[in-house]
Image 1 (tube, rainbow, N blue to C red):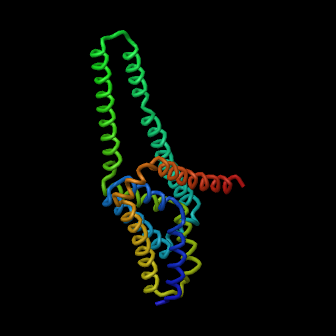
Image 2 (cartoon, rainbow, N blue to C red):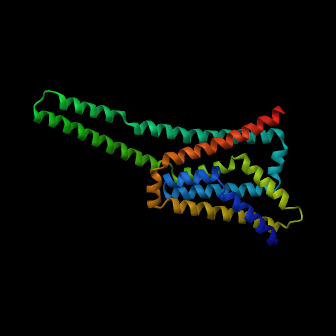
Image 3 (cartoon, rainbow, N blue to C red):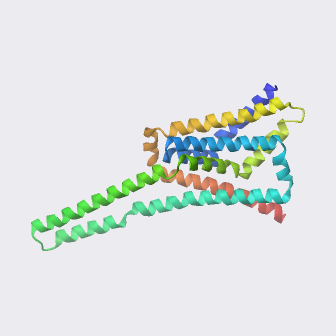
Length: 259
C-alpha cells in the first residue's frame, strides 16, 4: 500500500473540505436550522456522494463522462440547474423572512390604540379597548413565533436531509472535475487495487468526520440559539454561494461553446 500517496490525497482533500463551497454552506445552514439527526444525515449524504465520485473517478467512468461532449454537457446543465434552484430558494427565504418580520399589522394596531386614547371615550372603556388590542397583539406574536419555530425545526426529515447533502455534492460539476483531476494526476495505472480502495475509503472517512463534526457542534442548543439571530444572514450567504457557483459554471460553459 502506498502510504505516501494516501497522505498526499488526505492533505489535498482536507484543504478542499474546509474551503467555503456548497457542501460547507449546506451543512452550516442545515445544522443551525434543523435537528441534529437531520444535520448528521445531511453530512452522511455529502460523504456518500464523495465516495461515489471517488469510485467513479477510480473506475474511469467520470473521465469518460468528461470526454463525452453530450454527457458532460448534460451533467453541467443538471448541476447548474440544481445549484441555481438551491441558491434561489435560500435567497427567497430571506426575502420572505424580511416581509414576515416587518409585521405591518402591529403598527396599525398601535395606531388604533393611539386613536382610542385620543377619542372622547370614558376612561374605563378606553382602557378596555387598549387592553383588548394589546392582548390580540400578544396572541398574534405568540402564534407567529410558534409557527416560525416549528417551520425552522421541522421542515426537513432525516431522509430529506440525506438527499439534500447527497444531491448538493453529487450534482456539483466542480466536484466531478476535482476528483477527476486528483485521481488522474496522483493515481497512476501502476497503483494497486488495495491502495485505490484505501484512497476511496480514506476520503469518505475524512468527509464524514469533518461534516459530522460540524453537524454535532452547530446543533448544540446554545449554538443554535445564537445562530438563530443570524439565520437570515446564513440563508443569504448560502444562496450567494450556490448562485455564485452556478453562474461561474454557466459562464465557463458559455465561453467554451462560444469560443
